[in-house]
Structures are given as structure tokens and as C-alpha cells.
Length: 471
Ligand code: URP
Ligand code: ZN
Ligand code: ZN
Image (tube, rainbow, N blue to C red; front, side):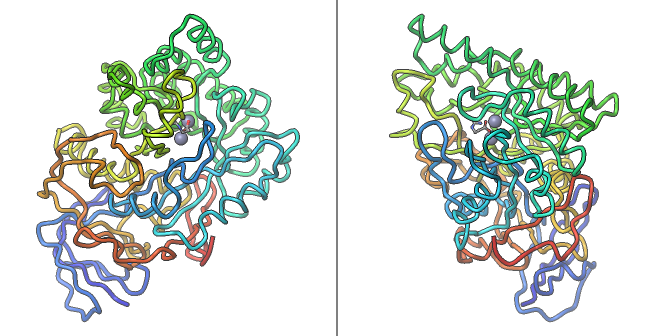
């Protein structure tokens, strides 16, 4: 199968030109000014942007959490991602306490098999180094293409690890070349604040934010940075939400330490006041870290513009409002933490970042495609438009007007964090390794087209043979 995409404005992290792109099989084989080649399929992209397929480095599909399971499984979550122009994501395998990493990986793979609509990789969330996985087993994960270890410094009594586990994992990462990712919040302090608030009779959703003040995020971010320096590993701080966390990352990067950070789409748009919405609507915005005071939004835009933060993910962790979020109607600490968003990242960042004059088109591609690919061992197979790269591309119509809504999104979630937001610019055709996934508002590929990607170690390039046929 060959595809010729003609006349699009090709945007990468570095380039911006009008050209034709020829796909032979699964890879881009030729890029030129005016290619006169026969192809099985010709796509006219005149007047459109041609972007690399976006990569979401932070998602939670089919994940047991907070006494329930996220409402999007691999098929529904990846379908939603595909409509939004995301062609690859890296999901979190959560090690159940007492289980080995192999058991956890097997479980996650069995949930994905046959359901994959886009390509995917896995991070390993380490929860237990005493009764479950060993340090030796952890050290073996990068050889299987699982080249990042995630640690939760919060969610006490559930996913949280102590500093010993954090530091030991960092030492393994320093040896194996894996990237350490942290959910940075001081879980012990938060646990005290939550118990106190409940004892005083505070049950409403906005207490989720009041019991997780930004200082608890700043403290844990700084702690993780300093421990990573001692261990000598590379560190990536996930879902940075506030100035208190941006500042230690800025300092670390200024000093040249091996520290990186991401924020997520929602932190630019949803602020603390959303949690105060009446009739338990505030419960929709209970995710962690919580929506912050609005002043943080400018701090985050500045951070992504200046590369203090290097990627924007979604942290898609969707729960139904009706039936799942409502488990915490009388107790904010029982609301499952997480929100949807896998489908709307490109639309929202294009609208408010690029059209809003905050970042360039090139920087948008860098934040949503190229940097996630580089940081998570997918580049140059993914994350750019270049000869030899996977033909993962988005024909993006910059003039298309869309009103974002749960009525039209493809996630199973019964609400959308950005409900009613009007954007100009949306994906029109989405290709994964030369296969058209989405066209004219329809999913035209079948589940099973997506593959598991064996990622390279941090700082290394992904060689062609690392893509395997099955998860
Ligand atoms: O509230 C969130 N973010 N839920 C997903 C788990 C996590 O902390 O990333
Ligand atoms: Zn987290
Ligand atoms: Zn997350």
C-alpha cells in the first residue's frame, strides 16, 4: 500500500514548508516539492497542515483505581485518541502490591491484545519492591522495551511509595538507562490534611484541592530532583500544575541537571473554581494534582514556551461522573481521581497556544510530538515527518470550527473537561504507519491495527526493528 499526501504545509519541530509526502508501506520514503508518483491512495492536503502523529506520554486506560476501573479501555481510549490526532501513547502498567513486574505486564498486555487502534508503549509504575518485583527484575525491563519507571509520591495506602523505594528505583535507573517519572506530591502531609478536613465535616469536592496545597507538590518535586541527583538518574516530573513545582524544575534545568517536566492540557484551562460548581458538578474536576488558582496558568504557558516544561500530555484517566465520580458525593476523598482528555489536546493547544499567540506551530509539534518521542525512546521512528520515520501523520484543517462536547467525543466518559469550548482547527485525516485511521469523521481502521512499541532507553534512538507485531 502506498499513499501520496500532496500539497500540505508540513510542520515539524524545526520545519515549515509546503510539500508532498510519499508513503511506501508503513514508512515515509520520499518528501519533495512536487512528487509525480503513482500511489494506491492520494490525499489532497492543500490548505491543510501536515503534522506528525501526536504522542501522549501519560494515559491510564483500563486501570483499577480509587475502588473502580477507568471507564475507557484500550479500544475506546485509543479510538478517542485517534480522533484527536494521537497515534501513539505510553500507558502506565501498575504493579499490584505483591505481584512481580512480569505478572503486571502480562495483565496489561492481555487487556490490550487485539484492541489496539494506535501504537503504544508501557511505563512500569513501581509500587512494591519488598514482596513483589525485585531490583533485578526491574533492571530487566528496559530490555523488553519498558524503559521508564514511574513512582507515586502520593496516594498513601494505595500507590504511594516511600523514599527508600523511590531512591532504590532511581539507582536501578541510573544503571539501566531508564527514565524515572514521578507523581510529585507529599502524600504523608496530604493524608494528614485530608483526615483533618473530613473530621471537621468538610466533604465537598473543592476540599480535594484545599487538602493538596501547591507547596506539597513543590516540596515533592524538589525532593525527587535532589534524590535523582544523588542516584545519578534522569528524572521526568509528570503533570506539573503550579508555580511551586515549576520553580525547582526551572532551577534544575538552568543548572544543567538531567531533569524534565510535563504539564497536561487541563491545567491551562480548568482552575480551582471549577471544583466549587454546585450539585456535585465540581466532582468532574477531581484529578490530581488538583486544578489550581488561575494565576498558575500563565506560569505554565511561560514554562512550556521556554522549555522549563518540555511536553504536554493528557493524563487521561476517565471516570464516569454518573456512577463513578458520584461514589464520593458525601466524601471528596472517595471521588476517584482522574479526568478525561485524550481526544482534545491538539485542538486545545492549537487554539489557545498557537492561535492565542502563546507558542509557535513548531513549538506545538515539539511539545505534543517530538519531545515525547525523544524523551520516551520513540524518536526518530515517531514524533517527526522525515524519510524513514513511521508514516504517522495528521492532516489538520486549521479552518475547521468545532465545539468540544461529550456528546460528540469518542471516549466513553459522560462529560468533557472542556465542554462547550469553541476551537478553530481540527484533525481531518489521521494515519498510523500508512494506514488511514480516521477520515471524514469516521474511524476507518479496525481494532488490531495498533502495535506495541519496544521503546529505546532514555537518550537513545529507536531503531526500526524495535516495533513488534503484537503486545
Ligand atoms: O488524578 C489523576 N491524575 N489520576 C491518575 C493517576 C495520576 O496521578 O496520574
Ligand atoms: Zn499522578
Ligand atoms: Zn496520571
